[in-house]
Length: 100
Image (cartoon, rainbow, N blue to C red; front, side, top):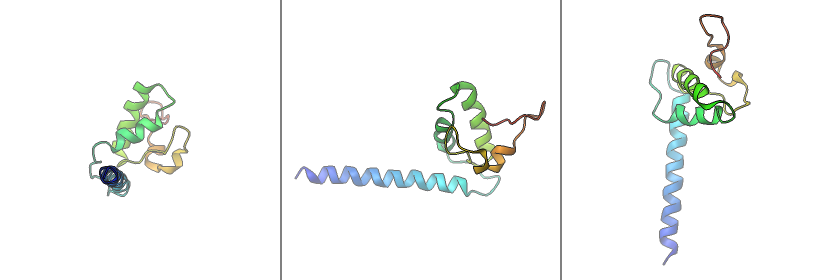
C-alpha cells in the first residue's frame, strides 16, 4: 500500500524533470527575438558561474544569455564555441569578450 504514494511521487518528479528539459530545449531552439522562458538563463548561468565570483559573473551571464536566446556554454570550463552568439559578444569600449 505504501508503494503507491512513492510510485506517484517518482512519476511526478520524472514528469517535472521532463518539462524542465523541454523548456531548455525550446529556449535553445527559439527563433531570434523571442523571449527566453523564466528560469532557463538563471539555471544555466548558475552552472556557468559556479567557480567564479558570482555577482559579476551572474549579471554578465544573464545579460548574454537573454541576448543569445538562452544559449550559455554548459559548464564553468566549457568552450564558448558551444554558443557563437555568447562567444562573439564584445565590450564596446575595448572589444574584450563581454560574456564570462
